[in-house]
Amino acid sequence: MDHQPDRPADPLRKRDAAPEKRGPESRPSERRVSDRERDAAVDILAAALAEGRLQPHEHAARVEAALRARTAGELEVLTADLPAPVPGREEREREERAEWYAEWRHWLGGLLVMTVIWGVSCVSDGELRFYWPVTPLAIWAAVLGAAALRPRDGKGDDTV
Image (cartoon, rainbow, N blue to C red):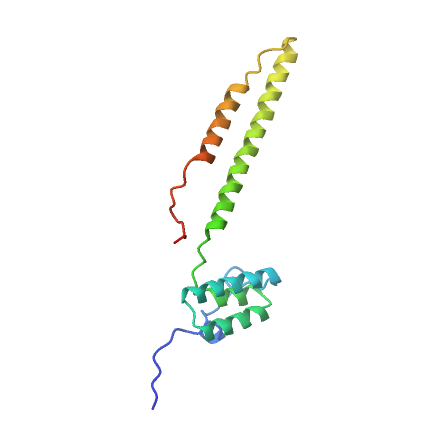
């Protein structure tokens, strides 16, 4: 008789999946999913295949199930045993750039607030005074500029 080695539970089969608990917050989501969410699940499965976490036949079966999935709960079952993909270098750079632009938006907000305070004080005194916000704004801008020019430490860099 052929003896098959023990294999991990197949997440595609309902009876092997974790038992459902009753209650609105503990049962799988019944929310309908969009094509974008299905594509995201397929991307996670592709990354798992590339990393060797899935066999080709497992990948094909899960992709097929992901494309047929109607609810978030069905998609969660397909990727529950897989780690989230590590963001690539381009994604990390995009996030850093977005953070840097957000800092400049805060700087512009500070510029606006300080200029209004300066303007109100000038109007209330009836004379045009030295534009004092130039000092804190210049220091803040210098710090932001230095942060943009600092060398990267290379941690988490996935280049070979």
